[in-house]
Amino acid sequence: MDLRNYTYMVECSDGSLYTGWTNCIEKRLKDHNSGKGARFTRGRGPVKLRYLEISNTKSEAMKREAAIKKLNHAQKIQLIRQGELEKILEENHICI
Image (cartoon, rainbow, N blue to C red; front, side):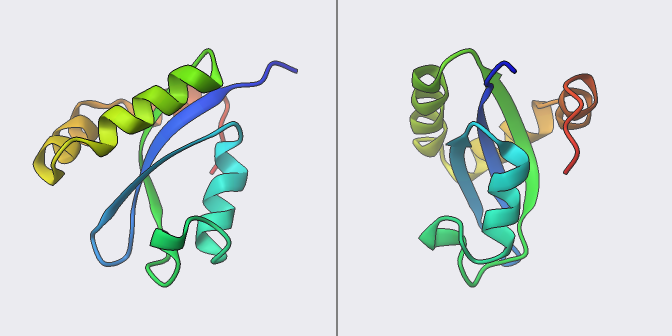
């Protein structure tokens, strides 16, 4: 089994965006939606996956997370619009 590293953005029920990284996106989304995820998303659920990137290493995923967190809200929305979430999910057999 090859281990993947993901940088992702979720939209919370209040419209806010949270960016994180994980090596199991399915589990991480379940954690966010069950209140076990990041402190930021607790009480803001349910969350919906809006953006996903796959990195070769944990370090790459964490660096990308940091870069995305520095973007303003409008820039994050633009990134979401330019992303190919459905294609990434389908091509990588990710079921969320």
